[in-house]
Length: 162
Image (cartoon, helix red, strand yellow):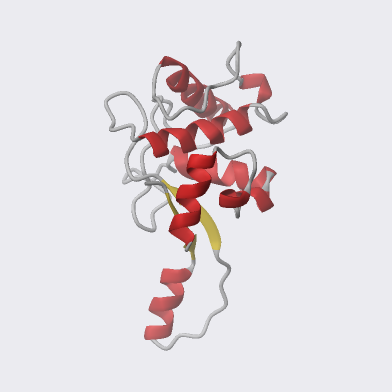
């Protein structure tokens, strides 16, 4: 199931345990339980979250020039050619803007507190979170209450936050 995590909590815990005073800001980050893409598990909630992010972002004026032609991506939780095309388009757009990203049509799950891969390349998922949050901060930080998010994802996120 898709998970939400507030960055900063682990840092605070470790610093409190070691007696180091600090200020912090918690940032919401949406994780995947498994990868989305060819040869990956493609769990329905994970695919659906990726499709939702892609639909919203690629229809925003900042990304629209790179949007695949034709109909909007279907947010149905099923990975196929359309979803792979949209992932690649998103990744290619980021690369064209000088962002470090691998254009492979896959969205790997970020692990633990890591936003970058072992090769120090930011996960596509980290770019999705940051890009969505930059444009719709209030919605990003409360996806479980956002009316544009599919009910299945809202319910899963609401259950996780409880």
